[in-house]
Image 1 (cartoon, protein in one colour):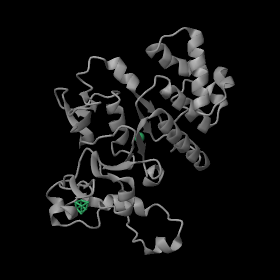
Image 2 (tube, protein in one colour):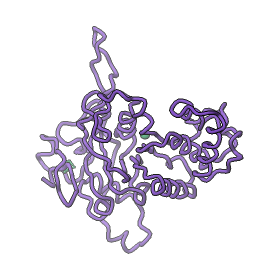
Image 3 (cartoon, helix red, strand yellow):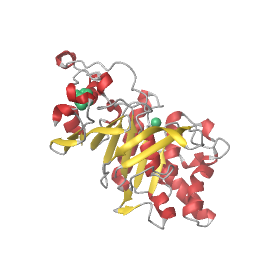
Image 4 (cartoon, helix red, strand yellow):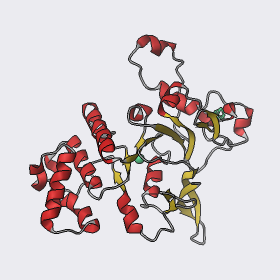
Length: 314
Ligand code: SF4
Ligand code: MG
């Protein structure tokens, strides 16, 4: 709720932080139990920072995070909270300790959160390996002995070890071969159904979240510019940025492709240190009107459970 995360990058003469990167700049959204909320935007838009702040890897600059209705800052049981929220990372290799066996990697969170006799933990590790589609015999092997997709399965098993409720998936398929991506998405969907999990699924393009998301939030330069149900967002995108992201996805049917108006997205996102006045998307927007240079648009209801931050829809 009204979450901000600013990183200081330069200090003044007195050593006080003077210039900030406004990585996350006042965003509010909810993730409902059992759903998958896709969080989409170009690199640097603040989506990973959002995930990391939710999971308490970063302290928010302002705003609050509520989990099951309670502020995570005021909750005394921080350890319990850390167990209820887990993260799956983009690079499954970098996030697995190369010197530890698969068994050791999955055992680590068990030792911290569920200290049980070793034999019991070994049973649990075998069960987790089977759950993610890996042979329990792999328990003594090292990360380098596995393919990218298998490593991501190990990362998922580690996240599941402590029975979390919410999993923040930070681009879990971006680094994988296209042929493997669908397998991991299918695995995540099966686990969600079996275990009643809730996902915040971070991705840099809309194609990756299309099938897995219940709802989708689009981020641009630290702000959420549009949020809607998945089908609604794909069929009636309202923000020019969402339209541009969608027009970059190839459609298998060439007739439909030619009917669709291509929206060009030129240039890089502006520097989050020197944000443009008015709408942050204005320097790249082909539909800008006069007010866009003067006032920053806010999220407003623009359709059924559909919210857009754009002056064209206010
Ligand atoms: Fe474009 Fe204006 Fe809408 Fe921003 S508010 S996306 S500049 S039309
Ligand atoms: Mg990222």
